[in-house]
Length: 245
Length: 278
Image 1: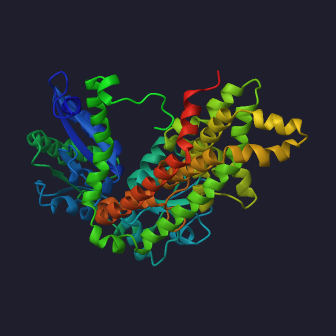
Image 2 (image 1 turned 180 degrees about the horizontal axis):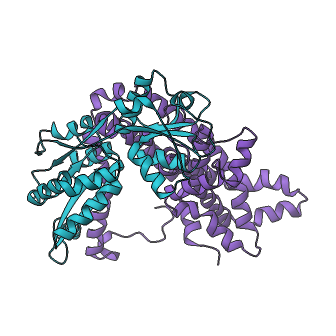
Image 3 (image 1 turned 135 degrees about the horizontal axis):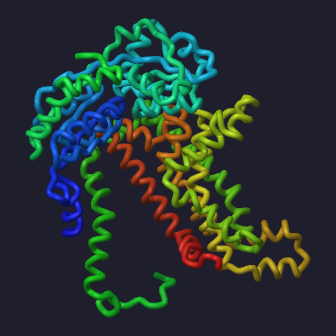
């Protein structure tokens, strides 16, 4: 038991060299841009290490509710965040929307999909997120807006899994965020094709961020949120394709 | 216990501190399951585990686990027999490679299967051209389960074959029995308990499979979303249902462990693990 306690002590709170550690939990679609924001934040705050944990929003919320170390939490939609802010055992700052995103239809190279209706046809191998994950909810709203019914062959647990299955050619098409599509094209222009869906502009996910006020690093966490919502964070988010709140 | 050559009161042979650490170890294993059980809403358990999604996941898990166990027996017994009774160049390597899925992270097994049997893979592309592609099908779930479960079956049966020795088979051959007849009448009955134990272990491994399935087969209700994936998906939106379904798997695991122990399956496994062929 003593050993276990010592192990936990070393992992949380402070670094071995006396530096401070900030635990930032971010939705999968935020991964790349948060890496940059975290690196900038570390550069401006010597002695501070940002420990970034990136996963599907429901995963992050479950971890926070179960008491995982967390100072900052950013999810991909407000409904998922509400499960943390409505938890009576957790004290959070008021959720602050810092970015928006819209769904995008990505198609594997060579697959004959030219519209959302093509992607929705039963013969097409369409992959989306599960409805409980924000990107899955966005896919459903997109289909609703376009008046089609989706017949996915798989409902993944996070948006990056959808992108991976399309980019690898395993699936014909997938619904991801426009930022994920842009990032995939930036990495490898031939990895996927983005098919324009006019209705996507009307399906907007707002990304909220909160500080877990119970954390000993709450002050530092607020500074991180300020950096995220201030000019440097905004610039990084805009460059990645996120819209302004 | 019945096989242990030496049993004495703990204090005589085991230092006190070893016994103390052993207690910590046992506590470490048992407490989380007990706490999870305490968190379960037992009164509403039947309602929680009979939702449409839960029943789909349960049914899918059960039948894919049965199918992959049968596949493990069909592939694993010949493999175990060859490993136990023959020697050829590369024997040790083959044995190590067959055990690979046992120690590989399941997600790596899933990626390896995807690379081979996915639509862009050498085998998967061929199957896809023939209209037999397995991507996102229940077949993919069975393949993933079989891949990760096979070592349990092979280890159990191979261990038992080594313990039994080849004397019975040699006697049968001397009496004029064909190799085929010897296999069915002498070899198989001799290792039946280990085969049953190994099959149960393979079944349990299949029932709990998560990473390889998710990576290789995907996740869709009634098609590829097995019970562990359903639990993972539910644990945030409906934690009570997630815990209730977890309890089903805990009970299933307890039944399997008890059955395997009484079938002597773990003995074969221990023997095989403890005495690798030099």
